Length: 127
Image (spheres, one colour):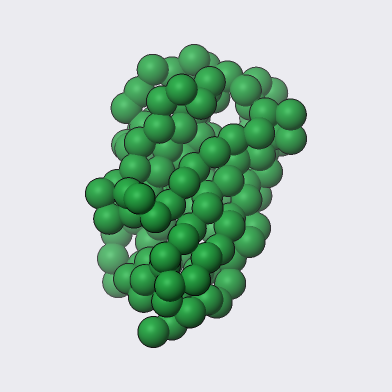
């Protein structure tokens, strides 16, 4: 069993930055893909960023490319989402997810890749 907890959400002005963290407990963190998703009010949950177990393969949704960066620190069992140049449309609850299959080769943008989900952290971007 894997438990993930997000932190770092909050309110920020457009153009600013925010870093989300996701701490995972449980076994085999370094062998799991990790992902970030978000859900805005009235919308379905969508993929934001994903990283494979080794960090060698990373995927982003088009709307955040060049602004957001996903990274992982296996020594701390933590994955990060650095959010720069944020926009009001980035406002959402952000969820961290851990993959169920070890050494999974992708894709990382699909819900079915991930078996363990956090409770989410709110990010609000004001204009």
